[in-house]
Image (tube, helix red, strand yellow):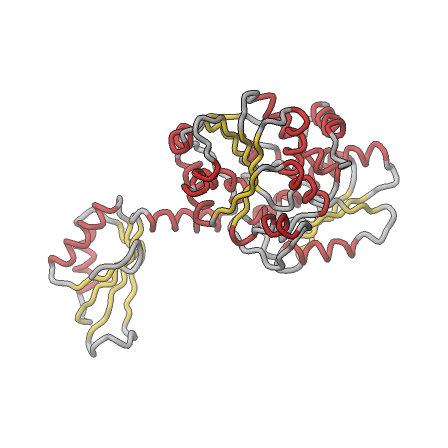
Length: 417
């Protein structure tokens, strides 16, 4: 029998209700996603949780129990890419415990600083989460120190499972809940809660291509891991699930689907533009399943009430900038033009005037004089230009070509000369 029972989950919910740390997060309808899927799509805004992630639920449950039942524990140690780190740091401070959090050197700076702000000692070690995990385990050689695993801990999973009970309370007619899968603590807990209280609700897990381990694990009948998960959804780049969470997934999760990082980026942008919600990659992964036409067809969501979990909002500025730039390029709102010129004074000003006259903004410009195909005396001026979209882009191209220049578009869908 799994240690994550409905009784344990309800005790976790009672602990959360008695404290100020865990918030009841809102649910909001997404018109855009509802129209896209032919379903009633309700976003569970768990990214608005304190610390910006569902991880606060599990950390609070585990540390509140330790503080009450194990007074000999003085310090906790955890490994995390960021969100578990913040949850443990906050919960430990609230429980009167010291905390040390090991994070990979690639962890977003915003998450590192937030973890320190909640009172933890932060140690940066290794290139990825598995490296940080291995190092963290070397720091628990004292009986007064307890390791707090991000997902291989029944108390952590029971705390995450309270999110499932909350969804059921807020959306009693829910048909499908969609959750990201990293280490499996969230989906395992939520699925266990729903299996006990609403067994007809379908639970769908989502992984990204660069971190997908669950399909292989299910096929093998045991957890399968990867050493170098690669995804913009850094919060789910754990490299695998545990025996505990694998058992919960195998028993209670109905479907597991895989999306691309491009799907995740599109979901981040849609949530920002349409829902006015800023989420991180892991937080957008459930929504990314609804941005992928093949996945939507596979799940056959038409007519259902669907709740994707927006599980985290701690996106770092660098990632957000990459996502926005990618989207602008896809929409032809950011283009790069290579214009062949006679390398003489005044050409840059002339072409800049042509582009400006069409109402486009030049971000950057550079000379290229070393390309092997350039005739002696010629150069390429490479402009990065902001436009309002495809029609505006074509007007800019027409204006520059109309002045007698050969132009190659080097970003966007394809190129033209």
